[in-house]
Each structure stands twice: as structure tokens, then as C-alpha cells.
Amino acid sequence: MEPAQTPSAGNQFALWQLGFRPFYLLASIYAAASILLWAAQFAGWLPLSYLPGPVWHAHEMLFGFVLPVIVGFLLTAGQTWTGHKTLSGYPLMLLALVWVCARILTLTPYGWAAAAANAAFPWAAAIALAIPFVRKGVRRNYFFVGLLVLLGAASFGMHATRVGMLNVPARLAVQFSMDIVLFIMVVMAGRVVPLFTSKGVPGTQPQRLAWLEYAAPGAILVVLLADTLALQGQVLAVLLLIAALLQAKRLSLWQPWKTLQTPLVWVLHLAYGWIVLHLLLRGLAELDWITSSTATHALTVGAIGTLIMGMMTRTARGHTGRALKADRFDISCYVLIQIAAVVRVFLPLWVPHLLMPSVIVSAFLWSSAFGLYAIRYWPVLTRVRIDGRPG
Image (cartoon, rainbow, N blue to C red):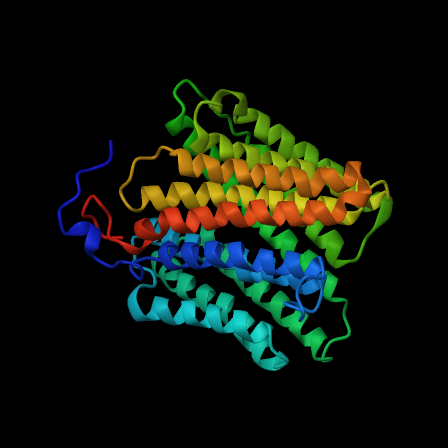
């Protein structure tokens, strides 16, 4: 049962009180709208290009959608980890404005302005996180600051190649960024999935092996290093297979089969399962058995889409004083994302000539999921907590 709400509480505007509020809302709206534009461009239905090519579709997925969710989550979690207030009010509004400017400038020919705005967003967020982290001395979380700095550098590098400053394949920066996001997902899943499982599903006893908690994220760092060194073929395929096996072992210890009656928990397990599948498919792609796009979309649509949706619903509920139980809208979002991922990953794999329909259908399902989230959680994210607590 949700806590009682005071008569005036539901009318108080609270969008700028904590980081998850504006960035979850902005990211979900952008995810719903931008993918439809890209699908229309891919199908040839737009008279003008929305983005200049697949590399920039990847850029907007990572820096337009994934990054603000990460920033919103870290600003929120950072306040919990340190006990110090993170960005709120006008500073948080200014950070959101930088993200909006970056999205607009990316669509313009002003490459240097776009580069500056896209790098400024994660770098400003890194500074905002570093201040409470250093004050409190939470050294185990310093690496999040470093990862935000690296993501800003990767985005800047992509724009620098666009304006001719760097002569480096833009896809290298895309892969580097995807590896960093994957590493963040693996680290955070290791922290929250066993915890949420034991607390949310009676009778579960998820296990954590000390060596595996280093080996599983460590394997992702090895893959990141291999990608940075431009390793390919059988060597990279072996590294990806080892990484997949380590993630699969880790997932099995969390007892996912016991979570089937708890959507708010099984969605996180399912997201981690997509990580395992992504690594396996990418290994097959390195052996030229399948296309690299298949593996990429197992990560972006399957793993990232599912984990973000699962975390956005759970943390939005938890940090607004609501019951930690998925309702029919949440479950609908989870299901839509799964169908979108299956259609985008497996339909072209089984029937290659259906690539275009798979892209269009998957985009519509993805847009429906995040559009539904935005509509459902608009009043949740913009109004004060129903239990009267700050946040």
C-alpha cells in the first residue's frame, strides 16, 4: 500500500528536486521521438535526413538517451551514497539545458559547438558528482567520475572526426562508448540485482563470489582494451566468449528462475541475460558468422533498453515514496521492450530480407514503451514525494 498523500502534495512541482526526475523524463521522451524519426529516415520516408548516418544514430542512442539516464541515476544515488545533496534547482536545470542544447546542435552543421555541448554535459555531471564524493571520501565510486569524463571525450572525438580534426574512424569511438556503458551496467547490476532480489523476492538467496565480482567486470575491461587496440577475429572472439561465460555464471548465482512472479525484479535479470547474449553474438560476429549489427542491437535494444526501463521504474517509485511493485503500465513497458529487442535482433537474423520491417516494427515498439513510460511517470517525476519526504 502506498503512503497516504496530503491534499496539496500532488499539486507541488518537484521536477528539479533531484537528478533522476528531469533526466528520466527527458530521456524517455527523447527515446520515444528520436527512434521514430530514425526509422522513418531509414525507410526513406523523411524528405530530409534526421541524422547524417548510422554512426550518428548510435551517437544519439548513447549520448542522447543512455547518458542522461546514467547521469540522473548517479546524481540520485550519489546523494544516497554520500549523504550530501547533489544538484537541484537552477544548477540541475542548467545541466539539463546543456543536454538539450547538445541534442539541437548535433542536428546542425555547427560541429564545434555540438562537440563542446556534448562533451560539456558528462564533464559537468562528473564535476557535480566529484564534489560530494571527495567531501565524503567514497573512493569506491570515484571511477564513475572517470567514466563520465571518458564518455565526454568519446563524444568529443566523434564530433572532431566529423569536422576533420581527427582522422580516426568514428565507429571506434562508438564501440569505445558502448564498452564503457556495458561496463557501467555490469558494475551496477552486480551491486543492485542481488540486493533487489533478496529484498523483493522472499525465499531467494542470491550469491556473490569474491573472485567473480572482480572477474566479470574485469572481462569487460579486457574487451574494452581489445577494442581500443582494434583487435579483431579469433582473439577477440575468445575474449568475448570468456566474458559471456563469466556473466552467465554470475547471473546463475542470482537465482533468476525464482523471480518470475516479481516483474520489478525479473526485468533486471532479463536485462543481464541480454548482456550475456550480446557478448555471445558479438563473438560470432567476429568470426563472420553473423552481422555485427545483430550483436549491437542485442546490447542497445535488449540489454540497455531493458535495464534502463527496469531501473527507471524502480528508482522512480522508490524515490517518490511509492510501493516497489510494478503495475500494469510498467509490465507493458517491459514486454514492449522485449518484443522490440527480439524483432530487431532475431527477425533479420532468421529472414535477412525482412530487415526493413524489423527496424520499423522494433522502432514502433520501442517508442511505445518509452512513450508510455513518459506519460505514466510524468506526474510521478514532476510532483513531490507522496510520503512528504524530500527528494
